[in-house]
Image (cartoon, rainbow over all chains, first blue to last red):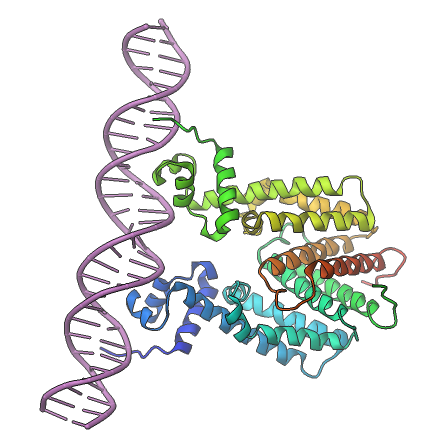
Length: 194
Length: 194
DNA sequence: TAGCTCGCCTAATATAATTAGGCAATTGGC
DNA sequence: GCCAATTGCCTAATTATATTAGGCGAGCTA
């Protein structure tokens, strides 16, 4: 028989593509095995269990997203950087829904530490550099930014905005304007009593 | 045998409790049947399929949350209403993680229309009344608010904020202050060219 | 070329979803 | 209070997924 030589990368990529097609929670060992043209048990030579299969996709998605965001943010600052970063997340979520869902699934602490998660946090801080916030405001702002981006993108892709006519692109830029203004007002020129 | 007389309400409540204990995606027909003390197939007299079981929990959660939010917002306005509304969502998510996850799962359009979803949108608009926004800004603001609330709550409960020392309560009130200020600046006193 | 190791396979088990058909308790009509 | 229809749960059986145990052939190694 033709030995396909399944590599960890090949496996993760295949699983990620499948997740984008059928949804992250429909991703099963069986489905990946079928896609790879092998029997289910054969995959257990490459993964510990179904959980690990999903974790692989999560890690892949976090890395890919971090790369895209890094690329988008490079050479930009202020509102420009904010929008580029935000769009990078939104575009990724729309072109890779399964992977995006994977990226939002919880990892155990050790795995999370070895993931690209910290890179994401670092990039948020880089974007915020343009707003010149002192601690602990910067940390609060990192959480705020993450919340807005993730919240918008996930509600949008879950169809929560479909019930109103207004185009989601317009609301998105309104949101970015609003966040930019809000962060600016939190900057050093304004006294924040706390 | 003692006929337990399973009612739709009883079933939904049991499923919701179970979801809070084991997680919404671990919620299975089998697990609910066990909890109710009947065999798996018996449940199919009460539900169409596993999907419907989950939808029932989603609808229950949306109703409960809408009730809590309505209660919290009643008699308040402005920043007060904003914080009460936001806290209601956050508290619900923390005390009922499974139901909160259920509330975020996608419904088909007809079901969504018959759900408490529209009530949530209406309450957001009620909260925003205090900020006196014109359309389409109000719609944008509804989406923005929903994004911030959902984003924060879901990242927090997914453990995304655990990696930094700052207490999440502090970031939460910073976030609410920021949102309040942002909405205020979007109000009629400021010209929003669009 | 004899062997070894690796990579996939078959066999088998357990859990979950779901359909078909059975039987007993309940209930409405008399 | 009795009969019969109805109802509510049960057993049996099927299919899919997850997972473990053990087998076998292909190709590298000596």
